[in-house]
Image (tube, rainbow, N blue to C red; front, side):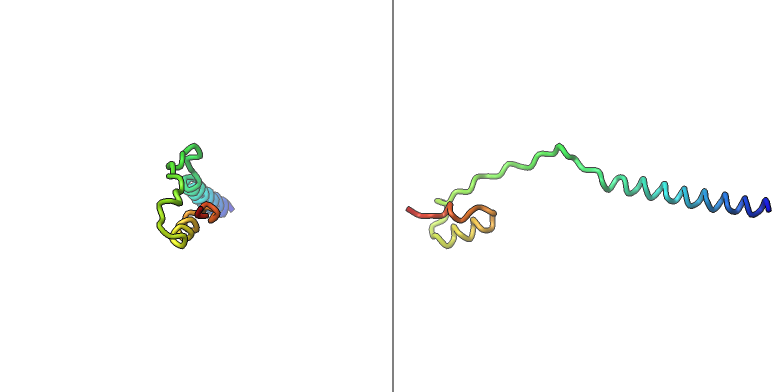
Length: 72
């Protein structure tokens, strides 16, 4: 009977130890810098593109509304 308890305690300590190590390792993965600032981007300049097609393509790539490309 005592040998069973020693084995059970040892197995429990092994499981708890392994769980603790996993929790610590996983805890580092979730860390992020929530106060980090994104790098400032340059404003979209539709006059930098000689043709309407190039302006529309560039606006689409930069997620800018294509209405900024209207020529006068």
